[in-house]
Length: 273
Image (tube, rainbow, N blue to C red; front, side):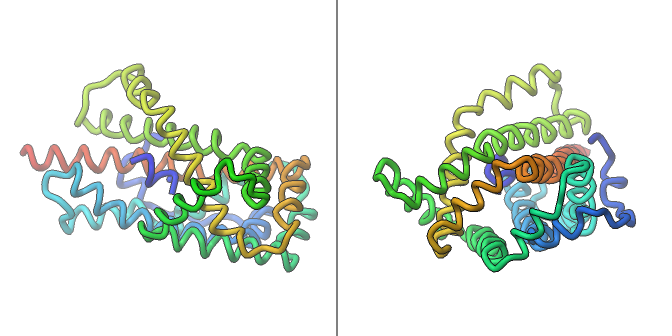
């Protein structure tokens, strides 16, 4: 399930489906400028589609009405967004939103957000993702200045390793959900060994996906814009932004992964009965 979690808290399924009113935080304006509500909407659509794939692969009865209802509860958009907002605000702390808002509300910043959203939505189509990956592979070792600028951005934000860790953690939570749901008998050490056995393969897949995505998104940008974005990422406030985004989205994916594991376990037990 790694690919789908890249492209994604012990609690029961009933509690997971609940939503709670969230207080507005000072960072909410920044998240809105970054297009986070729209990103979460895209991720919800990705997740619902992944629910069908998961049902085909792991649920004995397939995508039944009960399973579809469970997936809808797990991928509750309001709860997903609230989780990201809360995790982001906690990690961002007292960092200054002003220079970040100034950048993302500028013409270049708004264009970056628009292009990222468009590329993320487009890559839900497997043919487009495959083409984007092929375009990246064609540019590797070619001396492309465009790819060099994007690689600098990836390195400045540690996007490969941070996404890798997030994906492996989410997979751990999925296995943990299945174990605690009674479908598997594994110790935490067993789960860790299973998850980390895919580390290198996942790293390579993550590296290719991240570069392919950013190439697709940033190609239309004027020369120098990606460099400016990279410079912002290297500031203290830019680093705080990056850490907080990963904190918020990783918490969201961990919650979802655990709930999916519990859901699969429950369906397996129902079928056995």
